[in-house]
Amino acid sequence: MKITALELSKPQLMRAATYASVGVAVLLIAIKFYAWMMTDSVSLLSTLVDSVLDAGASMVNLIAIHYALQPADSEHRFGHGKAEPLAGLMQSGFIFASALFLIVETVRRLLDPSTVENSDMGIAVMVISIVLTISLVLFQKYVVRVTRSVAVSADSLHYTTDILVNMGVIVALVVSAYTDWLWFDPVVAGLIALYILHSVRKIAIDAIQLLMDREFDEPEREKIFEIVLSNPKVMGMHDLRTRSSGPHQFIQLHLVLHADMKLRDCHKIADEVEKALLREFEDAEILIHEDPHDIEEELPDFAKEEAHQPEG
Image (tube, rainbow, N blue to C red):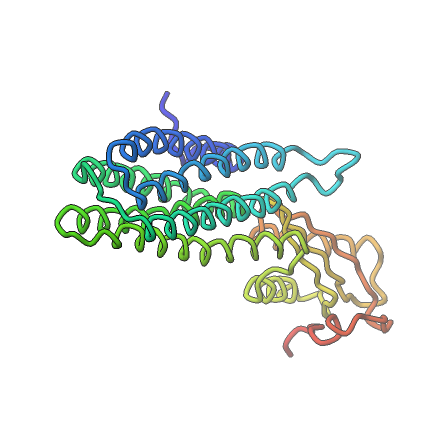
């Protein structure tokens, strides 16, 4: 029986994305290494180095996602999701190191320029690399859309930059083949290195924000307020706190209910609110605290500023 991507669970999709990225990276290393040996192109060397580091980063991802998907246990009661942003941070280190190596190699080749051999073969290899990488990135973007995986998202980002890198290498090989501009090949490699440094910034910042338990984006937080306050028995809410940990989301809030309600009724309303939130945030772990409406709580300043009451 044939299984399509739509039939795979989120954990299976995340694992499939890591296996695909490692497989593509290893294949690209093999064909780029052969092409570099035949051409001696520094821009082709740049993309070879990038693929080697891609393979290392993808292996880190594979291990991190395997760990992040493990269920919560007695020592990690919020799960193991932080392994994902840790992997993203390690990826940024891999990519930053590759950019520094390319800058050094660019300077060396500018000081001692040399011709590029067998350009046609190098161009063919780059075209194959682009086709493989585009296929991988399309699959990764689908997985990110379904799972919201931070590690797969970081992986997808640097493979997306690889597409542009490979296009730049094709341009460098064509120019080197038909002109005597020996400086063009290392200049392209240098521009690629600068682009890699630019792209690594987003990967590192996203990973750090998740490790620091950054709140959901504002549209998602407003959606939570909208869902909660749509229940006619809810008199207000405050102290909304949200965070993500790998594939897991956590939402906690204080629900303001009428002071004369029975505990059983309060619990029933909280359950209704939780179910409504789970329809929008299906993988979230939700914690709701019920407050009587006639008691004023001491709240942090940020909680006071965004306390909500139902309209009307």
